Figure 1 (cartoon, helix red, strand yellow):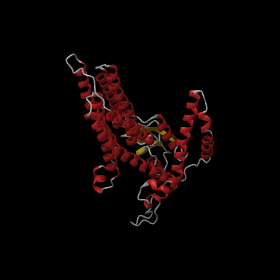
Figure 2 (cartoon, one colour):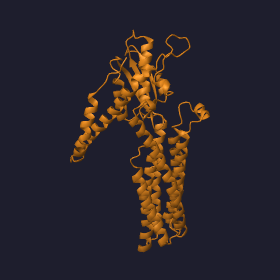
Figure 3 (tube, one colour):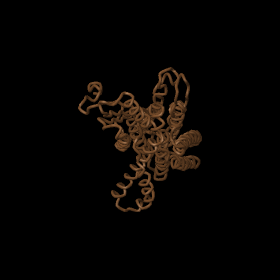
Figure 4 (cartoon, helix red, strand yellow):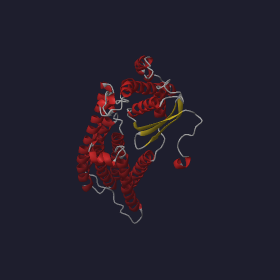
Length: 400
């Protein structure tokens, strides 16, 4: 029972790689985006093809190890050999790349923790030596940055812990702790900068303090150093496509804008003699932070609530499904939805009504393991049917 091979895919992928430089030279933006999307789709297909070729035979060989039902496993396949840790069935270069990505992500988080501690000290000195409301807002931003990186670092460690007690308490894993941590931090950011916004508005009122902000050279140096360091860290982390690190990238980008403006507002206000420039700038910055992190909070809320997967990922999962033809007649439905950062997938496959139970089980479970080997998929569920006209298998009122 072998899944159909597609040898031409590798050749087309190699031809695609040779054209990457040419695609960047295309002046028409829509044409360039069209070819870039085609390249992304070829990358997805190659990844699926690699997973299926590496795993399908090993999974099939793992089925029915006790064929004579005497309580002794006469044969064991790849799944038994690796204790169902399916990543170990993947090619070595794929495993090395995933290990490298995880190691790089952990290193980026550690660097951010250290950098935010140093920046908090520098900004604390700058804020104490000045009465600028923009600098106070920047100090609060750095304190919350440190809290953010601590939350990300903690959740990252908790997800990687392999304690037996935690595995029993969280039987389907702890990956949703990461978006929950980012969600908690987003709420803290919004609440904190709402306080800064309130203070800024009160200073702009006729009864407020209308003195111009004082900004010593040490404070200017601390702020300029913050902009440079955060810019370097953001560029270093930009290519690491994990949710935690991308949250840190967003934070670094925000810091570069925020600290640049936090420095300019009091400087311009001082030299131009405009007393309201600093509190007005702090209010604008606070509104931007509130909007930015409220949007991040909504993204994590919708992911945790089960929003549908992106169309590109759904096409990738559909291609994986059709890699199993002609073992299956077709697919009634393919549903993918977020359960945190990654997705859960439900396949409803169509088999011939005379298909033996053993064959139906082996096909379904092989598809399930192959789907769960993809980096975007946490869980996969496969059900079988013999007629496309049958009900979908889920109560509609349960999904409403």
